Amino acid sequence: MNLTDEFSPVGDRQDEQAVIICLQFPIGKFENKKAFDAVFDLEEIIRDAIETSGTGSYDGHEFRKGPEDESVKFFIYGEDASKIYNEIKPILQSLPGLQNLYIIKRYSSFIDNRLLPVNS
Image 1 (tube, rainbow, N blue to C red):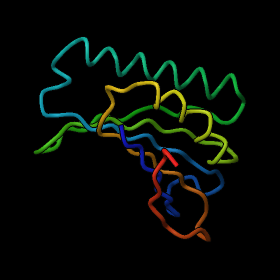
Image 2: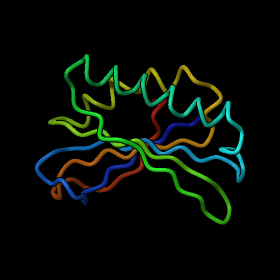
Image 3: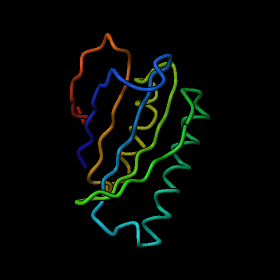
């Protein structure tokens, strides 16, 4: 699994920082009930980790179906995107089946955009 870490200065909630987890799957993957249920299991794990650690709040997910893939995004908000990221990184690294995954950390409009590897 190659997690990437992208900084983004834009968003709807400028008073908070955010971490967005993006998972991509082949077309038709969510037709498999086991795969679909696994997304909701992961959602619960992420929600519990974030909310019990006090690093932020989980704000939900979004499914998308495109011409080449299907995806789901999980949205987490809080005061410090780096702390949120550090809380969820071990969870995602423990799931080797998640091969097409990237993470966006949104700080403020004063931070440069950069794409960094997570495994460093």
